[in-house]
Amino acid sequence: MGVPVKVTIFKSSPKKTPEVGPAFYAQPTFLIRTSLRDWWTLLHPPYTLLHLSFVVIGACLVGPVNAVRLAFTVLAFFLAVGVGAHALDELQGRPLATSIPTWQLVTASCVGLGGAVALGVVGLFLVSPYLAIFIAVGVTIALAYNLELFHGRLHSDAVFALGWGGFPLLTAYFAQHANITIPALLAAAFAAFVSLAQRELSSPARDIRRRTSSIDGVQVLFDGTTVPVTSQSMLAPLERALRNLCWAAFTLALSLIYLRFHH
Picture 1 (cartoon, rainbow, N blue to C red):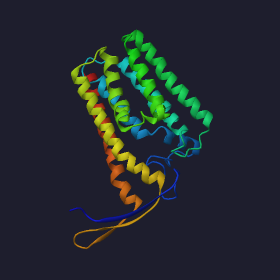
Picture 2: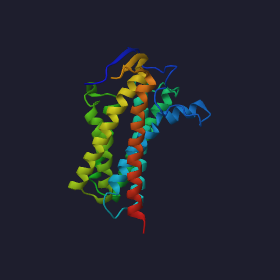
Picture 3: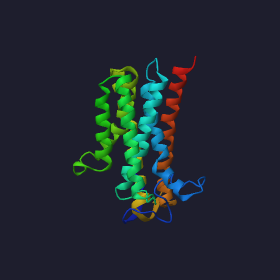
Picture 4: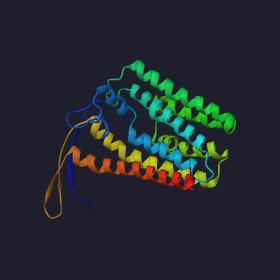
């Protein structure tokens, strides 16, 4: 038997509410200027760190590791995902409610994706012409997912897990070794499952923060004790798990970097 919980949720259009912001990392107080806070929020720092960790894990899965290729790959995915894809996402209905002008978002998306493609073209000469396949797939995922092209058919949990988890890891592995192995595919599956877990946690948290005006409920324990159910009580465990997930991937990436470059 579960613990009975009564929760009433009233939904409205996506916007910031007085109680909570659009994300737990939004509008940090250590940045004084509002414009800088908006750009910080746009970059989704914890999630960008998570996906860049997958890049490092893929590159360092086996040795030897070329530091220049690793740096280029991390930079390419930072531009593509951290800047380009997130700018495209904000253009679609302003889910983060930033005040960044539209022209700046368009510029950021072009610079981000264009810079990533340019680095990928360099990789064609340094690694293999087959890297062009990864470039084409990456651009397609970024545009189709974030702009919800093809009637939103690619805007799904599966595409997110593969595109933001498995794909970065596999691309980084190929950029180092110019081939794909079974261990690399299994590691990509690991990254995809972690990204799927992130999605499962962030979706309800995002729904509470951006589309819920109020939550009024009570949790009744078996001994008769009652516990108020609020937006914060529902958000706290979800967002603690998200933070831990991001730090877990980052520390694994650091351990692999240490393993490959410590002599």
